[in-house]
Image 1 (tube, one colour):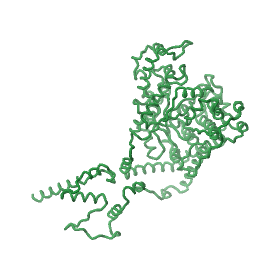
Image 2 (cartoon, rainbow, N blue to C red):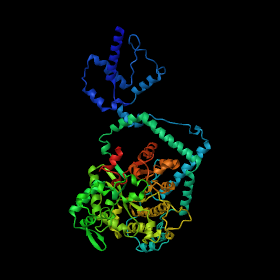
Image 3 (cartoon, rainbow, N blue to C red):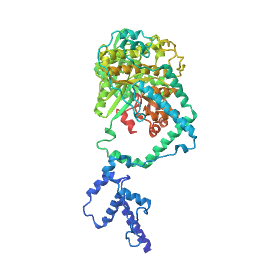
Image 4 (cartoon, helix red, strand yellow):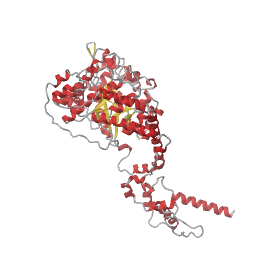
Length: 638
């Protein structure tokens, strides 16, 4: 009984000592500022009972292990380094390692690394591995060719010899006959030969036959068996490597994050790379703005119905509504389960209270009041961004291609209402709605749509004074987007037998790859012209891979600097691995996908991120998918 009591006391004293020696769950306890603060608070001459614990703690931090004999507690003889057990030799090396400041200079030594060699011994025939690697490299060369031709970015980790050519030329006056020559050119869809003779410039443009050949190579590559197996194995390896990195280095990464001065989740720069201007506000913001407009401008004429002007008050009276009746539920603009795989119902959610007239009044740039209300609400959103200081957005505005003066109207709206902010950049989205406009007799052929989109841009690049407001607006435009429902069936396959834009007079809409190629071709010549004139160039960043066939992602890989969504990459291992190697940016919106095409728990964003794809989180349409003002930080935090 006495022995058992003595054993209990010894066990209790050991547990007390262990509890005092316990430290923070970091691999390097000295990285924890709490422990350092506690040590400073301790007295300079601790009590005798605490000396042993303090010494043990110092030995623990310095990597020295106390080696005692089993009898008298005397130290054993010092072993030569080659006779020491591995654990003790490792601890000795750690005690002689550089101090904390030196480790900060060499962060790669802070982490454990895993290296796997012998790829040729994986059980797959070496010839298959070699052929697959050659195919992957060939695909990367195809992308590099089209990115270089259009002056878009190609990942510097993939090509180290990339050099940005110097800008040449001066901003002078060009030939006045350029406009007439463009109008009569048979090559307007690529703006090529006849322009070159006029302005004496060699502006490159893509070759259609070469593009179709490259497209066929890419389509054959993504269904090649050995290539699919190779890319699938590499993707699985990347996922496993990330999980291993988490097991080995997670706590060290957390400690390193905490050491960054004056930076945390709230004050790092956050950029929403995919958000539409017409839905950049949340429902509560729009509701308050509508109520405020009804009180402030009740007698202002905002709409013309059958030749008669209607005031804002009369518009709501015709709907039997007052400001008191309006609520978030009355607006009914939040996407729900009824919009799943129903893009038509989702588009209807842009109409407040289900009335298209309210959409025209409040969230359109081209209306009777010249976009006054939309300009005001966009400026309020910009004010919120500037107040938060660390949030930035890339808003999208629409150019439909129905008329030549759309660009001038949009630029006039932007300049008149001063929708400028250092936190905002603009992209111009082109809806793929040629079939709708052709049916309404607004367009005679696809060539006319391309002219309406690109002709004003060439004119303002040649002579900025011809469109002064557009010249100012373009200084804040960074690229083009192509938008619409990708799940629509395509009746035509883009090939060499496809009609040219001037001959496309069919009722069917051109396929996705047809739209993307001719947008890319025109943008390529425009970029070279803008670079010659000393202006910034534009990029192509379409909606791609949200739904529809896989070849959308092939077109995006070849022609686009970045894409939005990219959900279908989860079904195409070859393309997913190519997007990883080329580091193509993918703006993903899990909440948007959850309401339209893919449930939240099946979203591949975490998988893409763990494999190393260049993914950014975006809101898409806060008006339809979000409830709070700080939409992007909320998504990042979740």
